[in-house]
Length: 181
Image (cartoon, rainbow, N blue to C red; front, top):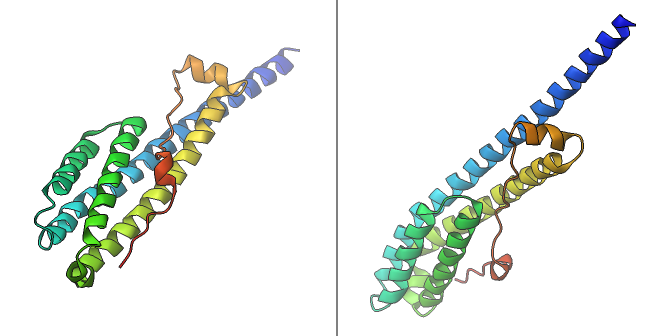
């Protein structure tokens, strides 16, 4: 009888350890995935000044567009957390769309090899951001599901595991960005 009881306690212990470890793994994966998003956003932020300078060379009288991009880029770089970061990045994306709209009015700029390379780089970075966002959101979905599911929710509550927020784009940004040459 005692041996059976000890076996049940040991099995229960292993079960609890496995549940706890799965929560830890998902939390670490979500933090790593967020870091990947952050890296891609930094690449985007680093590319933007070069893009702006290239357009400035052709469109010097578009000062408000350039100021908006600088302001929104700064806000995006300072934002923390998925919700704040998403809001700031959405504003920056809107400002970039304005920049590309300005660029369409300058055929010499559209023919510039440097501008074309910067546009291609930005397009690649946008794709990388989208892929990183998808992965992050999938990991967060798995973590949040596990935190809410019985019996893991009991263990999650005891050890302070908290749900994470998804990194979502604005509804207007869900359509692909049209890059015209």
